[in-house]
Image: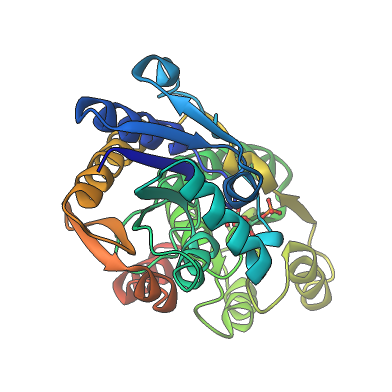
Length: 322
Ligand code: F6P
């Protein structure tokens, strides 16, 4: 193998740059040519390839976002788009590709295999932590710390005014950001899409809550079946007409910021392992970290089997929030 390419795709996440740095420097160490593809699959289609060197990834380990830029490509989802992308990879004599992204990125890679037989290896980059085959995705640790810091601040004002705050966090289909940030912030209620009827449970709990603690924090995942924070807040007001309820939607601040140390180290491990995997002849697998060790999961399984939240976690959350 002489030449590989790397790209970031889908929603950016803190730590993508640390992963990219590891990919480029490992490839350079093995005397491989390495190209960065800008703007994800869109850049692959448009031939937006840049030759990278060890120095082109200097001073990025601490930066959020992705220096390669990213996109959610619609054109790549068409056979014509995939054909163009394959032509560009062949034109640049690319023999292996490393994709840093989430479920959409890996679903794209599975489909692309029908049009292009160049090996692909994935590194899980998404704040949602919603891929099977890894305990951890790049960006999750930083995102939950960003969320918990914001909720701590909201707690100060909630407590001063005896208010109920409904805080919405990201996680389109997965509630792990809500679960971890809610547990970390000591929230009185956590609503996630993986468990049904949590709103009824929370309303019931509010009706018998301790009189010495009037402020409450309810963390709701954007993907919860009860709707977003505004819908939840309306339900609370309907049930408790006297309650002073406010909403805070944390939004994209959870996607930005300098990655945590854990994020940088794990992202580096996965980028390093991804180059090794390509050199060993592996293909269409996602690198993960399971119980502290590097793991390999076929893309199709990584996107199919959504990790379920640990039942002990859910039970602990209910008991500690009383
Ligand atoms: O997948 C990561 C994520 O941040 C989700 O949590 C969120 O639902 C989505 O991306 C938002 O995507 P966009 O920035 O394209 O609106």
